[in-house]
Amino acid sequence: MLPDLSLGEILQRWATGELLTASALREVCSWASAHPPLSKGGWGDTSDAPLSKGGWGDTSDAPLSKGGWGDEARSWASAHPLEATLQIRFQHLNEIICHPHFNKIIPNFNLSENSRATQTTLETLWRLWLPLADHLATQQQTLGRPFVQGILGGQGTGKTTLARMVQLILSQWEPKLRTVCISIDDLYKTYADRQRLQAEDPRLIWRGPPGTHDVDLGVAVLDALRRGESPVAIPRFDKSAWGGAGDRTTPEIVTGADIVLFEGWFVGVQPVPDAAFDNPPEPIITRDDIAFARDMNRKLQDYLPLWERLDSLMVLYPVDWRLSLPWRQEAERERVALGMGGMTDAQIADFVNYFWKALHPELFIEPLLESGADLVVRIKADRALDAIYSHLR
Image (cartoon, rainbow, N blue to C red; front, side, top):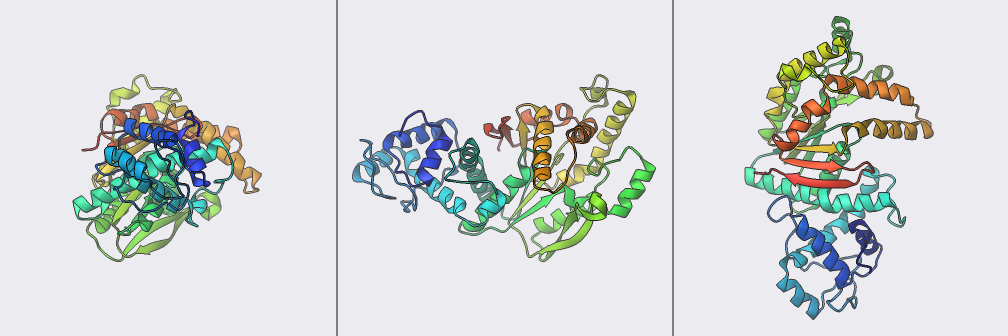
C-alpha cells in the first residue's frame, strides 16, 4: 500500500478486499487526527467487532488475516486509542455500501470502478455521512425528544442525498432511529393558491421563492413531530403535476420520528438589512431586480417561526456559489440523455439567475458560515468535500 494514496483510494482498496497494512492504517489515522469528529464519540467505540471486508495490518506491514487483529496490532491499538476506534468505522462503512438501498441513493456507484467519483462517495461517507449520523443520534439521546436538523444548500450541493443517506444509516444502527426527511418543497402552496399568487405578483414565475410556501403548515408539522405525536401526516409535493407546475399529493403518514431532517435551498436563512441592496452583487442589476430582492427579503420574516423549530442548522456551500449553475446544467443534460426531457443551458441559466436574484448566496448564505450555522460543509467543483468545520455547542 503506497503512502501517498488518497483517503478515497485507501477506502476503495479495503472495500474491494485488499488487506490494510499498517502504513495505510497510519495514513487513515493521520487524516483522522487532523479532522476531529463532529461530537464526542463521533469516531465510534472501541469494539473489536470483526470486519467483513479487508483486514488490518500490523506494525511491520505484514497483512493480518481478514478482519482480525494480531497481538502486535492490539498492542499498538491500546497505545493509540484513535486507531482502535477506526475499526468500527470501517465496519459501518461496509454495512452501508452493501445495503441494497445504497445504490438507489447513489445510482452510479460502482465499487469495482477505479474512478474519482467512486472514491469521492466513499470519502464523503467516511468524512460526513457516518459521523453526522452519529452526531444526530447523540444529540437526540441528549435532548430526549425528536431532534430537528436543518440542512441549507443551493442547487447541486447534495442536501437531498445527504438526508437520504443519513436516514439509511440511522435505520441500520442499534438502536434503530426513525428518521423523517422533509423538503421545503413539500410545503409549497397548492397549485390553485400559487396561480392566484402569480396573478397578484407576475414576478413569481417560478415556484420556490419566499411567499410560495405554506409556513403555517410547516410549523404545525414540525411541532407535531417535536411533541412525539403519532401518526403525523407529512405533506408531499408532486413536481410533475399540472405540466411541471406541481401540486400537493397524498401526504405520507408516519408513526413518530426520532430525527427530522428538514432541507431546502433557503432553510434557516435570515432577513438582511435593507442597505444590503444599495450596491448588490450580480445578477441583481436593474431597479426591478433590486425591488424584487428587497421584497423577497421582507417575506423571509414570515419564515422565522419555521426556523425557530430547528434544533440545529448545517450549511452545504460550494467553494464558489456560481458552481450551482454548471451543476444544474450538468444534471439537466443527464436527464435529456436519458430521454426524460429538460431545459436548455440558456433556460437553466435564466432559472438559476432568478433564484440568485431572489436570495443571493453572498447576501443570505455567506453570513451564516461564520455565525448562525452549527456545521458548515464546503464542496469542491468536482463535488468532493473541501472542508468541514463546526460551531457546535
